[in-house]
Length: 184
Image: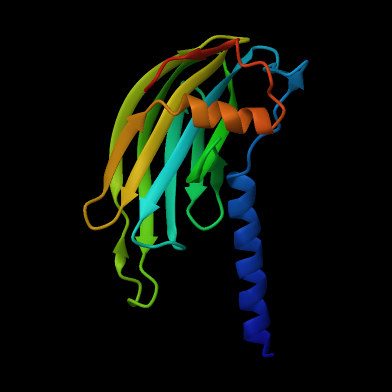
């Protein structure tokens, strides 16, 4: 293996690690089966799902912006799955700790490519601009953002409470009675 090949492999490995670190799920605090946000924070529960012509090369990135912070949430069609009671959905359920305050789900980007088509696909951009507020100690379910990533890209919003709360229960959140729902 040439020195150039080794360098390229090392750079690719570092880039993969950075992407994984930036898109990893923060640790959840669960006590007595309930989500307990860190002091001065609330938890936002939001699912990102995607469908695409590509079954292995599609991603969705959604940006949440607050007064002093910006968060990038991702879902990858090839590795992320939300488990429901009856089916699985390609996507990711996020439980994100946010400092109490006002936020906006501001925008999203999709990316997809069809295998064997010389990278044919697209990178659609979606303006969202959906505001929400989170209080300290609150756990807030915002619903689902679903991306259709194909030649007619589109975003839709829905309430996927049965599926998403089922996934939370799989993670040890047995008491969902304190989760407030305010859909985007």
